[in-house]
Length: 396
Ligand SMILES: C[S@@+](CC[C@H](N)C(=O)[O-])C[C@H]1O[C@@H](n2cnc3c(N)ncnc32)[C@H](O)[C@@H]1O
Image 1 (cartoon, rainbow, N blue to C red):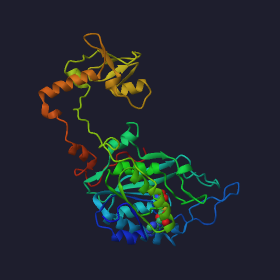
Image 2: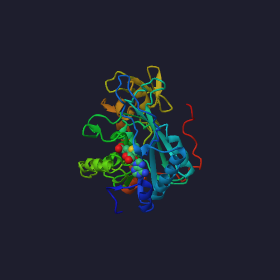
Image 3: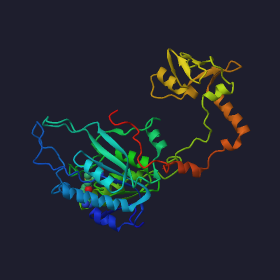
Image 4: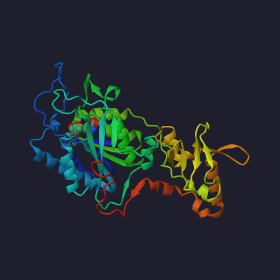
């Protein structure tokens, strides 16, 4: 594609129509909010609030905002590959209208993510709750779209081994990250790079094309470049384009390598459940396992769990409970004395089960080819019913 890694000046509806069909892997859109601010906003100390009163955020009425939203969402759907997804961020002023139009156009919502701001602007007049979040909608092109990229492993790695939730606690863009021109903010709504890092790292792969139709200061391009994705920006204001160009030109990402940008790893080892140690006679019900410093002693139950100090759980969850931790690797935490009296981690027994498996069933233990590992980065859901059942009942 000719426009890779460039900013195209113009109205995004017109520009999107000129881009090749099905050519983009991921879209991040931060459209006008249609805030409809009436009059200036003042702090109690009589300083004026730097509000979003820009000309690009003005629409005569909801109808014209909806017409515009429908037009750019249609344009985005045309340029998205059939494996692509779109993220749209907005506030209560616009996100519900955007969500309805997305659904009407055939997109299928995968998640709505709450960006919870650690440092929101207070409600100065004290007449409402502090508005402390924005909403991101993540959607695929259609309900029947079988494949899209979700790097589950990457999101877990970024979140200390815990599955990443749909509420993201991230500060507003302030300090050195906030671009200033002649001492003034270059843009009223520059988004934090941390937000884009999660979006791009979770739902695209190195080499993919990431498009942002409302480029502003180019936050999407800056993070995409750092993460070795191609990017395309569309922006109508030349002043913002200048800021974005300079910002992105100053980024020199480390060279692409497997060491720094690893393919999400698929364990090459066959999975061994703890119960297999009991079934194969390597442990007996009633045996005792010890913590590394021997302060906890757990008894092995006949159904493959552990009990200690009045608590019960898997080797992992009991280790976590006893140490007040969110997670624990039970294979390296729990220890036993082997037949020579040597204090060994439980993993030692797991390796014996694996070695036996290798001898008796080599095809089960062959490491999956790299092609498979790459494929795992894609979620495939052809068997999903048209109406995905909600994963969590609303209101819980
Ligand atoms: C909410 S801001 C995006 C800020 C950006 N995410 C950042 O981090 O700097 C929306 C941007 O879209 C631009 N814009 C508004 N309407 C547009 C249109 N029809 N076509 C292209 N750009 C537009 C505005 O000039 C503004 O810079």
